[in-house]
Amino acid sequence: MRIVPVKKIERLTESLAIKANIILRKDIMAELRKAFLDEKRPLAKMALGQIIQNAEIAAREKLAICQDTGMPIVFVELGQEVFLKGGALDVAVNKGIKAAYKKSGFRRSIIQDPLRGQKDIQFTPVVIYVDIKPGKKIRLTVVPKGFGSENVSRIKMFKPTTESEEIIDFIVDTARRAGPAACPPFIIGIGIGGTLDKAVILSKKALCYDITKVNSSLVLAKMEGKVLKEVNKIKLGPMGFGGKHTALAVKILTGPTHIAGLPVAVSISCHATRSAAATI
Image (cartoon, rainbow, N blue to C red):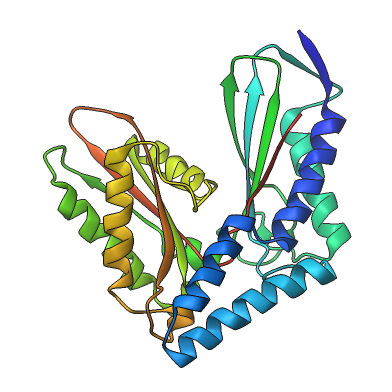
């Protein structure tokens, strides 16, 4: 057994929340630069240039990449041989997020009662998902999810006999409906399988994967490529200015499901798709 003080989790959550909000992931920056070089439409190229410049300034000046610092999602992979000492896991995570957002001047965005409107806006609570894993390690992934893109994400419960082309059409239609308000070029996370709720979690986890790496499943890699090609045919383009790059990447995660269903969740994420992870 390994004893881990929850204070360690609090401190790591704080540092990851700051990093995720001010430093755009290397894989996304790489794809943005490739898109900039590839783009021919002047307005689209200008938009990509400004997106890249904004990310560079944010990292240099230690400022938020986007004013919407999101509703943080924290994925915790907790080794089953770990004993947490000194408090509760959820309390430590929320303390870490609050400290990070307060210290860095990030926006308060969380209302405590969704039916009462914006009367009590705070930094927390955040959304926490815990997976129990073998071993003695703890891995934290902090995902500040902005709501410009969250609001246009969708899920559909398909019949198990549904052909892949119909699923692809649904994903493409979701990207089309998202429009410029969701700040393209998008990263599109797709979850297929599980239950309604599990599919959504899979789609969120998919957003955390390195977009420069090819899916280890040949079937899913082919589907990701097909979806990306079809989404870019929309020609919504960077920030809605047209052009070749409506999306930078599509990542798919799947899970077992019931014989009578086929849930498909689509998490649209903006060009400032943010996540940071580390292991204790």
